[in-house]
Amino acid sequence: MANNLRITGGIYTNKKLGVPVASGTRPAQAIVREVLFNWIGNDLTGKTCLDLFAGTGMLSWEAMSRGAAKAILIEQHSYTCRCLKEQSSEFGYTKDDLLVLRRDVYRWLNRSHKEDFDIIFIDPPYNTDYFKKCVPLLLAKNLLKTGGYIFYEVSAKEYEEIPWLQESIVIPRPLRYSTEQGDQKEYKVIKNNNRGNTYFGLIGGS
Image (cartoon, rainbow, N blue to C red):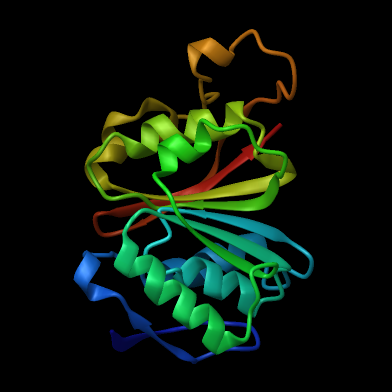
């Protein structure tokens, strides 16, 4: 791993972390992370986080540095998961604090879950169908707590092709969940920005 990423805020500000380069991970840029936490706040005391397509884990490390109580990181590459677990041990976290799971994200989302989260990070590989499939599914599964946020990062191509990213419209649920009982709040993009070809923003409920 190469030590070329730093945490931008909280108790571990400027701490450098190794990047598991062999798996082709694409970490969120420092400026993007700074904008994100300016949006949601720098005091995340007691908050729970879900990090989908965790990669380098930088979004989770940033959240834990700012006081988050727990993070679950979902990543399918074995080498990347091993690196994340090593870093978690270096921080002194237990599995109750930070849990790394080697899973396919879409399959994991399709399971039944008892836990929900204050903040969900989703930063999948660019120009795949992961993002447009997973966001409606995780909302249908009620994984986001009331008042919580989903932070996303996508390519310019994806931003242009997914209507609910560009317009202030309700994110559709998968058809098979449309008549199920449970949380029927409407979700849409509430903040968005871009840095070059990287588009990112927040999804919230109403």
